[in-house]
Image (cartoon, rainbow, N blue to C red):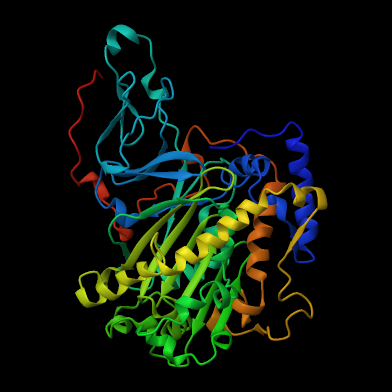
Length: 491
C-alpha cells in the first residue's frame, strides 16, 4: 500500500515533475523519481486515475456472469459481463459501508452479495436488495444506489478501464498505435484468445522500470541475458535467419506508446506460425500490415502506462510463436505485481503441436523463466538504489540520450508506409532510447497536469463506447448465456 507522504511532499513532487520535464529535453531524468513514496502517491491519482489502463481480454469473459478481480492502480475492480452481454468494471466496495463484496479472484455469478450486511447487487451494478429491506429501508430510493463503475472500452479484444470522468476516448488515447495493435491482436479473422489463467507474481521494483524495459530496450539483452542467448540446443526458428540483430531491429514510437520489432528479409517468416497463418490473416489488414507481419520475427512494446505486449518467437528461440500481455500493477513504492496472459490466435488454439511450442514462451518469461530472473535481479537493484538519499542531495540524473542529436550515427529515420504511421528508426532497439523518453514524457505530462476530475454518476456520459460488448470479440449478446442463481434477498 502507499506509504505516508513527507510533510514537504507536495511541493517536492511538483519540483521533481518540473525537473523531469526539463531534464528530458537533454535525455536525462532525476533518479529519485524511482521508488519514491511522494511520487508514488501522486502517480496513483495523476497517472492511474487518468489513463486508460488495461484490465483483461474479452475471451476471459465469454459467458454472462463471468468475472475476475483486476486493478487500476491499487484500486480493486470486479470486471464482469452482465446478463445482457455488456462489460462492466465495479469498484470492489459495497455502497453501504465500503466492504469488499467479492471474495474470489474469478468465477461466474449473476449477483454479488456483500458479506458484511448482505447488500446484494446484480452483475449490472444495480441494487438487488438487502436483508429486511421492508423494515430497515422503507424510504430508500433503490435506483440511486449503484456500484461505483469505471469507464470501459475495448480495442481488438483488449479491455481498458478509466477512473476519471474527463479525458479522451480509448481510440484517441491509443492514437496511431492502433495500427500496430491491429497487426498484433487483430491478426487473424477469429481474433485472439487467452489460454488458461494469467500468471501473477510480486517483486520489489518500480512499475515504471519494467514498463520502460519492455517499450523497446534490446540494448540490455547483450549484457543481462547473455547467458540465455548463448544456451545451446535451442530451436531458434526465424532468429537463425538474422545475422545482424541490430540491423534487423526497428523502433516505432507514437506520442505516448512504443514498440520494437525484428524483421526478416523472408516474406513468409510469419513469426514461425504454422503454414495456415497466411490464409487465416484478417481481411481488414492493409497490404503494408500483411507484408510487415509476413516478415516479422518478434514484436514487443508498451502501451502507457503499465501494459506491455509481446508477439513472436521469443528472443533466442525460447519458445513460441506466442503472444503475451504483461501488466505491471503498482503495489506500493518500489513494489510491482506482474500479471501475465498467454494469448494465441483462436484458429490455432486446437493445434497441439503449435500449442506445445507456444507454451514454451513461459520458459523465458514467467516466475521461473530464464530471462525473467535476469530482469528481476536488475530491476530490484534499481528500486533499492532509487530511494538513496544521495540521489536527492546530489541531484543525480540518469541517462537516456541514445538517438539524440549526434549521439548515435547508426540510427536512421524510416519513411516507408510498410512500418506504419509511428516515428520509426533503424537499429533503434540498440542505439536509440527514444522509447524510454517517450514513456517517461507521457508520465511527466500526466503528472504535471495535476489531479484528474473524478468519475461520473452515469457512465453513459463517458467519452468511451456506450456499448463495450463488442460481439465480434466474443460477446454474449442478449444475455443468452447462463449465470448463477439469484441469492435470496428482499427486493
